[in-house]
Amino acid sequence: MKNVLISIIRGPRKCSLLKLALLPLPLLLITGCPSGKQAGDGAVTNKLVIKGSNTIGEELAPRLIAEFKKEHPKVTIELESKATSYGLANLRYGSCDIAAASRTPTTLEVQENGSQGVELNEYVIGSYAVAVIVNPANPVKNLTKEQVRDVFTGVITNWQAIGGPDKPIRLCIRDAISGTHLGFQDMALENRPYGSSHGLFTNYTAIADAIAKDADCIGYTDIKSATSTSVSAISINGIHPSTETVNKGSYPYHRVLRLYTDKARESQQVKDFISFVIATKGQKNVDQLGFVTRP
Image 1 (tube, one colour):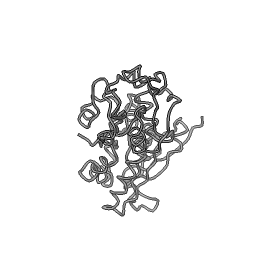
Image 2: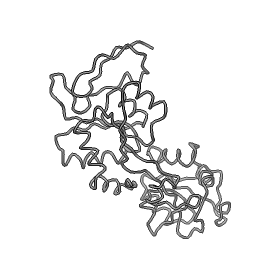
Image 3: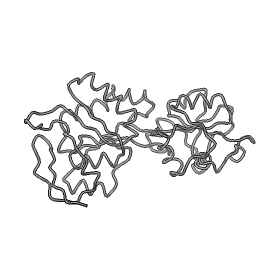
Image 4: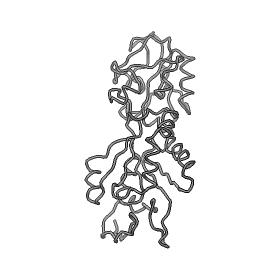
């Protein structure tokens, strides 16, 4: 790996050149001029750069950005969604203003931030939660986490094994390119592959509609859609999925969503965007997209 000399623009002034360092290749590709930064001619830009979690970036961030820009049309916002670790790394090296995260930073990430003089500010914006659903005619109303894992990975293939009728289980899951497909696999399946007997759907509504028509199906959807009378939400280890159980942290299939900033580099654009997201208008959009609003 080569030694590389790089410079980064931080805050309202240019930073000094970083020391010669051995940097991982992905970090050598980190570029951009985050908000309130001086451009080459010394002019301050109105650009806001957000990088990080695909759970936030797939649907939620684009909606929040679009709504925010209605009130702040002069602010340019760039969004790049890959992973929480990617956002935190970019924030550490001054290549984004906000790191979108679907988990808290690891001990190593906190240490790495500290080594770069970065003190994180954390803002909870809501939660991503998934409810397991069945047809209302299905007698199964509660499952353990282990049973859910075994059903969706194909270890359990008949309803009789978990208190239902002697019929085959049919899985209804999101398409493989969706963040939800991977998110549920991580939260509920311990990252094991899905069972082979499944149907793929492009959205939660399609999953709920399929289950409403077939008593042998099981799938998942957002908490809000799970309250429909056309489907029945399954309790997990005796805990029913709801806004209350998610915000209390007792319902297992959820992730708290956060935005992280570098405390020393919070521009006015950053403050305005975060204030919008956690206020009533922003939280309305969080709710409309099926996420759980912040406590």
